[in-house]
Image 1 (tube, rainbow, N blue to C red):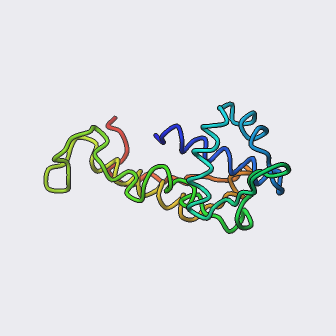
Image 2: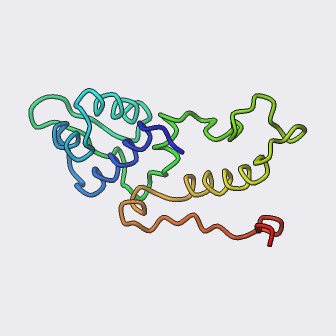
Length: 146
């Protein structure tokens, strides 16, 4: 669902939240299972978005810019996915909209809204603690046919 960079970014902020102090580039690369250049690319986006701070040189590394409870997951996702994440047709159709819906248009729209709400409302601290829940409820008309 998310780009690979986004998944690494989400994993990286959890690692930073767990440590609470500067995490060296090499340790972050090891924890994420990626190369140092990939860590630099992802973390640079998070630094530019003011989600993460960096300190170069010996003893340097990355840390969260604010308390993990104050950073919303949407802030972590936006730098790699873009502000319009999830707006395109799930089936890749160019002309999919409310007037010309694809077969999954309504279901994807409702699911996308649930995901976007979760990303806006849940924090990095909650994700690090493992308490993020999508809390989906079946809406009439969503149930599969019998």
